[in-house]
Length: 390
Ligand SMILES: *Cc1c(COP(=O)(O)O)cnc(C)c1O
Image (cartoon, rainbow, N blue to C red; front, side, top):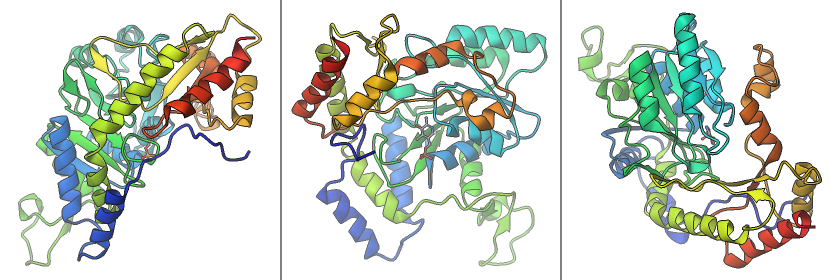
C-alpha cells in the first residue's frame, strides 16, 4: 500500500520544539533529569492532579499503574474491547485475569448499564474485579462520575486509559484530574494529542501510589533513606525494594513534551473545529457521526464514522479501499481486543461483546490532525461522498 497523501493522524513539530530538544542535547542531562520533573509538573498542573510520573510509553504507564495497585495473579481486571490491546495487556503482564465490559452503542465508551449488570452478577459469583480500566475512546471522556459511584459500591480501583484524551474535559474538570479515579494514564505517541516520540505518564492524587510508581519506573530502586528497609551505608547507597523496570523517559523527550504542551490548547481547539466541520459536511450522507455531549468536551483524537448498516452496499472494506486508493489515509479503531488470537487463546469468543463487534464492522476513522487544512478535509468528504451516496 502506498503511503496516503492525507494520513489519519500526524504529529505537528515546529521550530521551537526542535530548538528545545537541541538545547537538551547541549546540556549535561540526557536521560532522566530536570526536564522530566518539569514536564511532570506541567502536565500535573494542567490537569489539576498533585502527582505525575513520566515513563517511556503509555503501555509502560499502564503496566506500572497496575503494579502500583498491587494487581497480581488471581486478580481480575476489567476493561473494554473497543481499545488498543495495551489496555488489556497491562493486566496480563501482572499475571491477572482480564475480562471486558461491552461498549455503549452511542458513545463507543464503556456502557455503565452493562458494567452495573456485570458487577451484580460478579458479586453473586464472588468474583468482583479489583481494577477497572475505562478508556476515553477517541478523546471522549467516559461517564466517570457514575463509574466512580459503582467503584465505591462494589469496591474496585479505577485507572483511566486517557491515551486519547489529554486536553479533554468532563463536567468542568480536565481529564487527568483523578477526581473520579485512582490513576490516569496518558500516551505521547506521535499520533496522540501531544508527543514526546514515545512516552507516557501516570497521574494520581495519592502520594503513596506516586512514590511506588517512581520506584517501579526505575528497577524498583530507591535512594530515599526514609523508604529503605535497612540503614543507609552512606551517600552511595540505594536499595531495590521490589521488582521494577527501566521505564525511564529521557530529558530529550520531556523537552519536546514541554514544548508541545504549550500548544495543547491550540491543538485541541483545531481538532474540535475540524470535528465540527466534519459534522456539518457529512450531514445527509449515510454515515453515523460521533455524539456531542453537553457535559463533556472531547480532545478529538479520532473522528470515527459508522457506515449505515442498513445499506448493505456500503461494504466497509470497499469504502476503506476506495478512500485509500484516493490518497485518504483512513483507518479502523478498534478490532475488538477479545477477538485477537492471543485473547481468543484465553477463552474469549466472537459474539461475547456484540456492541463492540457490531461497531467494529461499520467503523471508519477519517483523517484528523491539527494542521489538516479545510481543503484537505473537503477532499476527504468529497471522496467519501462520491462512493457512499450513489
Ligand atoms: C496509544 C494507546 C496506548 C499505548 O500507548 P503507547 O504510548 O503507544 O504505549 C494505550 N491505550 C490506548 C487506548 C492507546 O490509544
